[in-house]
Length: 193
Image 1 (cartoon, rainbow, N blue to C red):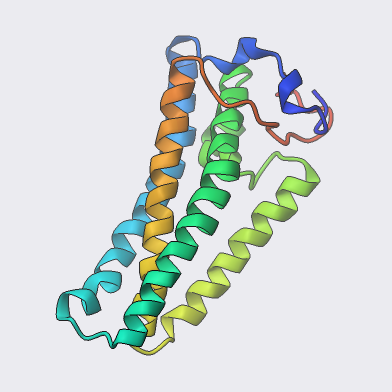
Image 2 (cartoon, rainbow, N blue to C red; image 1 turned 60 degrees about the vertical axis):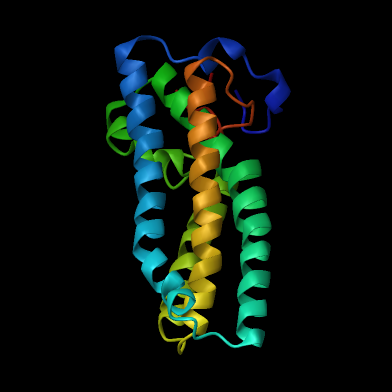
């Protein structure tokens, strides 16, 4: 399959994992990504809820908090995770499960996130996003209270939405109903299906 093949032309035969090995690869790839997202949620939640528990936010800060949560729910959760990242993670895991390669199986979570063995466009987008997130984390850590908590509150909600979306796409894949999206593999990849 070329990297430009439209998702509606994908051969559906590989969209359902078959056998214990395929299930294990799918679980390692998607599960590793879920663990990565869960780690972010668990690490940021105490910071995000601290000013809410204390009741220390002004009316303006509460308004900004709510607005930021709503914004992140749509941009990070719905648009970023549900419409793009989550279905692609599952489809890439399915492609790997259909034609496993030892090194890529070992790196399955990174592979599923498009950080290795992807089209040039996907590699640039995935690594750019990762570096952008790291930069934002460094900047936000220096923000004074309660602004760091406000930013982290929106991020927690977006990540939680994304975690749930990822889980739903994973469960759909297990019953053969994976969303058809292009896996963005490099041209001529042995994993092309």
